[in-house]
Amino acid sequence: MAQERVVVVNGARTPFVRARTVFQKMSPAALGGVALRETIAKSDIDPKLVDEIYFGIVSPPPEGSNIAREALFDSGLPATIACTTINRYCASSAEAAASIVAKIQTGQIDIGIAGGVESISSVRALFSQEATDFFQDIARTKTTGQKLGMLGKFSPKLLMPHAPGIKEPTTGLTMGQSADLMARQFQVSRVEQDQYAVDSHLKAHKAWENGFYKSHVVAVATPDGKIVDRDTDVRSDTSVEKLATLRPVFYKDGTITAANASPLTDGASAVLLMTESKAKELKMMPLGTIRGYAAAAVDIQKEPLLIGPVYAIPRALKAAGLTWDQIDLFEIHEAFAGQVLATLKAIESPTFCREKLGLDAPIGKMDFTKLNVHGGSIPLGHPFGATGGRMILQTLHGLKARGKKYGLISICAAGGLGSVMVVEAF
Image (cartoon, rainbow, N blue to C red):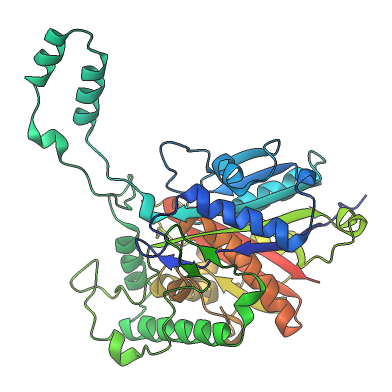
């Protein structure tokens, strides 16, 4: 018996904004709550029908690390909905969607919401283990004498925080450093990266001006009374000449700059999922279905950190029963322009595909008129836990707007991980 399709009924995302700006005073729970609440409102469904919520986040707040549950409380949706938080780095909300799909397909639940959130503005500075031990020890003292004795061991260096950073514990390299090395390995030039970034900005700007994003981006009221209804990092006045004046960020002779990389971002996204028969029963018109999904991982001591999606693409296409040439829109996460262009070189390389993937031919050749047609993470921003949800919505709405059918979503992630999803629009 054929497995019933799971459909994406609707969804919403907040504007994506540069960290420590207009969403600085909004907690991850508050941002996630907006995405959940607006997804229910846009779907016009009784929230009591939702069985579970899976939400992604990479840097959860210490006072509420199950951000799915905290976002639920903030949203005002029924407290009886079970909640789970997922961390697969940049692919977290894509994995959340795949997990909800699996639960529905196996009959465990009928309806679920998947999404994610990231508030880089809320990430706190860390203290050393020595400082942590000291303050824990002083908290356990019972007498004044014990407290004074502990204070005698105090050193001002204990108050020196470690600035938050994004480093791979295994290699000691930041993601930016790894991406710069990846661009070198695949011989992606600085000019190519800058041109790619400019093109993505211009596509995103055009999409905003044409009203494309109004289909799924919702306005957010901030605690200080501002209404934010648009992504804040999209630039219509950028150019390759302007980008060429910027210095490399990670290596003096590197090619990655602040302009050809995605910015640190705050934002949230969510999608509503159910079986096709349930949608019909509830008289809902779905956006489409998740037709195939695959994850991959590479040894980051031997392979480029962000190459994982290339390994997952053939598996996702096979799961979807499609070929590369049948895909109408490609959404590739733009952590860095260099990473995207290096990924495409691997996809198109007979040698890479034969030696690394065991394929007889390249995966395919990219038609750039199908790639990130409404802009990607470089102009839109990249709130780690929310990007997958953004890409699902953007791909399905993009296919609908163009009267097309199949989309492929590719997300690289820290730790050498890659996630690829194939969707079909209705």
